[in-house]
Structures are given as C-alpha cells and as structure tokens.
Length: 234
Image (tube, rainbow, N blue to C red; front, side):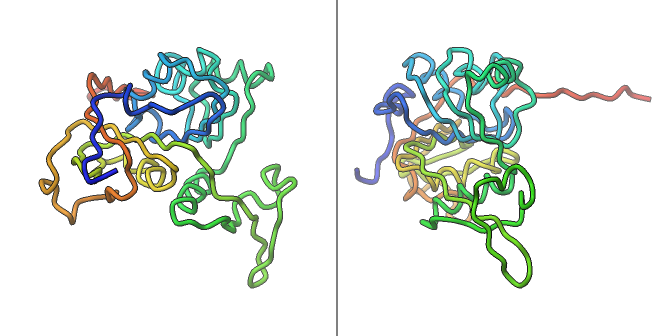
C-alpha cells in the first residue's frame, strides 16, 4: 500500500470491520484508548464482536460504549471491575467473558506479533484458568500452554505518528498499544499528532511503521481518569 498510510478519519480507517470479527483494542484503563475509532464502531453498528483488551472501559466511555449497544459478544480481558453494564451482561449470560492473567494477555499479543503459535507460562497453573488446557513440565516446573491471539484488526492510539505509520506512545499508553499494533492482520493507529515522515527521531520510535496499515490524526480526546484519587493538603 506504499509508504503513505494516512487516511482522513476514523470512518476511513475502520472500513472493512464487519460483524463477528475479532478486534484488539489498545490502552490501559482509560489511558491510551483509541477513542475516535471506538466511536466510529458505535456508529457503524457492527455486532457480535470479540474484543481483546486489558479492560472493558467504563459504562459511558471506551469499550463500555460498545457494550451499551450490545455490539460485543465476547470480551477477552484481564481487568473488568469498573463497568456495571459489563457485570450485568456477564452475570445474565448475554456476554461471553474470558478472563486472562495480565501478563499472559500481554504475551499472547506479543506472540501473535512475533509469529509464534503458542507460549508457555506458569501463570494460571492449578487454577480455573488451566481447565482444558495443555501443560508441560520444564526443568521440574509446570507451565500452561496458551495460544497466540488471532485478531482481524488491531486498533491502537499513539501520541505521535508519521505518514509511514511509525508510532511513539506516552507513559502508561505504552503498556498494551505497541504489542497489539504488532499483532493485528490490519492495524489501525489514531494519533494525537501526525507529522511528515522523517520528523520522528528513529531512536524514539516504539512501533515501526511496518506493523501499521492505516493511520489518522484523531480529534477531541477526553483523556478521562478512571479512578480519581486526591489527598487533602496538610
């Protein structure tokens, strides 16, 4: 598709996402989530999605918007404690949920990006997480086999990007976005600032453009705080 991977907006970026697809959605809590793309998915009305994300947003923001519209059939996440609608759908059986240890979630994303079919991890051995899964013993220790994720699209959000798709993330937003960007069959990146190729210092790039297929400059980021904690001055 050439060196210029820029599309005009979220509408063009999300073209081709269809009912029943599996999406990786970057971010950590409400930090570094692809707000514009999520809003576009809500407008598109795509249904029966499987979403791989560290968390499920909150009731009225992030992936919570897709849950409100009953657009998600399955969530694969590690932390889901901030979303009452998620809880309601899970307990009622409307939503299929796969809870994954956070390190395992991250490494299954990474394995997909590296082209590895499986990983072996000690996390989850001897718990409900291990039910029905293969285990192997290495050097006297039991490990659980987990498959790499298989996602149709990865949707990530970066601080800066260039027209070739090179990305720089900031702080907590760097947790899941880079490894998900590597892992999707098609990766969409929305950025706060889009610059011409050559303006980013190569030593500062977190995700090389080879992993990114579509990039656009987002607008109107809210950057909410999931749990605001303050301390009174003495």
